[in-house]
Length: 317
Ligand code: HEM
Image (cartoon, rainbow, N blue to C red; front, side, top):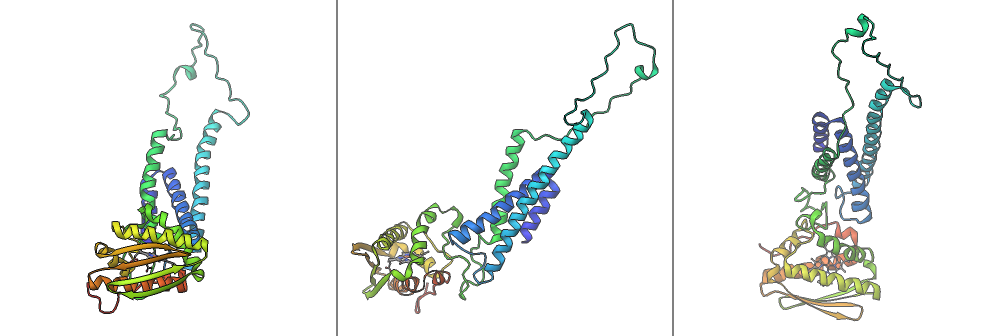
């Protein structure tokens, strides 16, 4: 909140009024759209982990909409006023400005003090016009300024926030730097749908030497999602492209991704996955993931996904 207020004060102090109004509108659009689309529609994360998010987020959206309306109205008013002033000088709307007096022909001028002793002409202060280049410059400045400011405000960049280890998890889908991970956006729909339809999924996990063998199945449409998700996650494990980095278990898994072997076979209704490691510590991570992450996601859906997964007993990094 302090950063948002700080950036608003700076924009007001050092920018023109148009810049400030544009800044307000941009902050407002980002604030409201981010929460409505990313938090509420895609459910990628919340402002906070607890139920207070249900109060804070609507307030932020209301502020965002308020910023947009206020910024637009003020900008329109401030761009209309100088035009009116200018019109006042040149004539009223609809009525032509008075025609300039014709200058008397040379030699016919009367020796009139009022006509011959014009003082220096004062420059008219015309409203400042913004050319296209300046407007683009300001737009660029806004684009660079707004995301970090609002990101911090809304908690979008919440890496390593307090409360992680004690059950409070502000974001359950973080990759390394979540806003930039296009792969995460591609993987998200399957994960989201699996969590929403979790009660249609059946799962059996057996411990084997060095890891687990798990069969996860469902109706045909969900089976397709399971297969897609597992292929996507297998690719992440193989390439070491992390996801859900706010969760200590997932962080450890991706740190040791090179020690994990994962084989996937399609079975009717879903997949059978064998996941092992020759490193006994990594085998603990694999089992913890299978029993206490995936199986619990299947049992409890999104509510469980909002919580982190503890590291397995006996695990030492
Ligand atoms: C109901 C929801 C979900 C289902 C049914 C599901 C299913 C699976 C399955 C079958 C596997 C193969 C490993 C195993 O069977 O134990 C897997 C692996 C994986 N899933 Fe999910 N998953 C779900 C939710 C999530 C969520 C919310 C995330 C993270 C945001 C996630 C990330 C991963 C990762 C990173 C792997 C590979 C890591 C590993 O297997 O060690 N999954 N998932």
